[in-house]
Length: 209
Image (cartoon, rainbow, N blue to C red; front, side):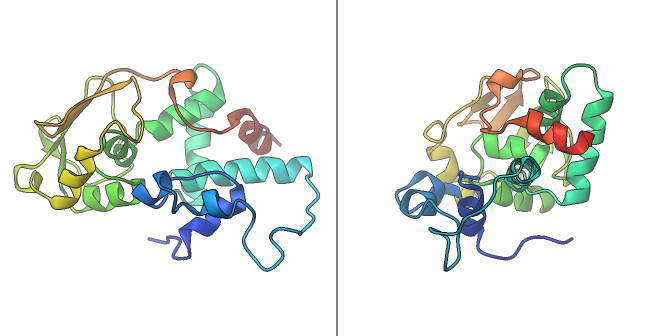
């Protein structure tokens, strides 16, 4: 599967916002945004860039796509699914992305980043309602319980990440039992509940052209 292999911090600097691609580094003073909050490249500080409406829309879409580690075709498919759902398209899009298993593993504190969450899901370390699931894109439903497989409960990376659960921020639509190494997706979130600094209406405008 195609994936980005370049410097992740450059993506954050290009978009001017933390995409939380480097785990705990993003929450520390080592974060590149904290040190160099300007676009990468030799002329990053001084380069003039005309802010056309298309450019603003494109950058907003790229931020959201990169945040959830999706390819363009995958992201577009989520948008088309959101259009067919009842309610506001932009909020539906965010809801679909939040319900991905790799994102939920990250939100529940099992891993410090979505990339690591995806890797552990692919390696069959997690179960949903007692059944092993190895698809990062698996869509959770309210009431679904995410647990570690018995052989995976002592993984050092998970143990270290759970020690910091809460310090990275929590969301009200999941509950986590750190001692049992399990989390539950409680309810579908409203837009106000989802801590993503994105203007999703701009993305909808881009795809509506």
